[in-house]
Length: 357
Image (tube, rainbow, N blue to C red; front, side, top):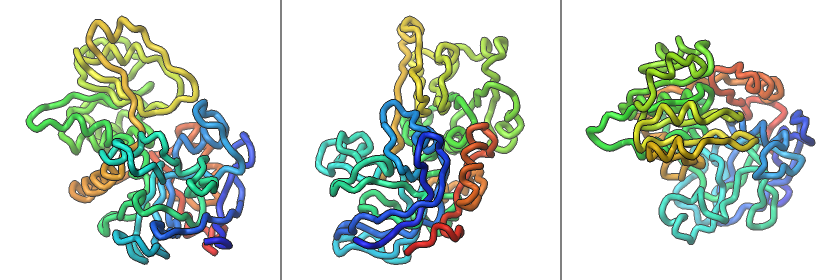
């Protein structure tokens, strides 16, 4: 409501250094819920956006990151029937769309041309959107999901962006009775969840990484079937033309040709990482094998609900490191160095500097 304040941590410029910041929430309407933020995951896109590195989105400062949000409902609008005060809910990277187009009515609302991003965007009433590194948010009820009681909130947070970003494209490889052979390129916050999801779907999973530093974790902790070092030519040759898909989670610029070669005929290279610079490939590499390069943007609300249900049904876990808000700048630095196993989650409610007013 007007006058209600959310306490947050924001970047003021492209240094991406975050410090305490307060802002007014937009006025809650009849279709909205007010959420007290409990936990929020830390994503590479948060850092890219804070640094002003995303070509597709100029950063508006002050900028509050965070789009893997778990919170408690503290107020519901008069038209809201699917949530009640006290519910634990999740919010991902999209918080609005037109609600009327074919995409919105086909569970592809994340591709709606009128979609509203959780942060660094403008809501329908003209209010700038700010993310979950904050004490509270106002969310249209359509863009929140209920967190199952059996799922710890800090475990749920990474699923709301990283997890569903992997799950949404992997859904196409769920044909009953078919044994898919897939590759997961990059074993970071998204990659470790992608391995877990693909294994839960029954796939033969090969982790592809630039070194063997994570081989033990990939094979023994995440239960991947194989591990491939991308700069080992002998290993790469053994896998040429064998994979049905590769899920590319790498958020920095990298060559595509070595991985296209690993795909079988009609194989798919699915890009879900978001490097700040263009990626390149040789056209004949995909023409000769009828291969495809495609992208995928987060997931629909239906995808998020399905993934949360899968997590509970299969007893899956996210590998997270929970930290307080005042650790966020060090978390950014460590994430940039790939020094986290595998996702930072901020304990927002447990950090005194982000109390809800």
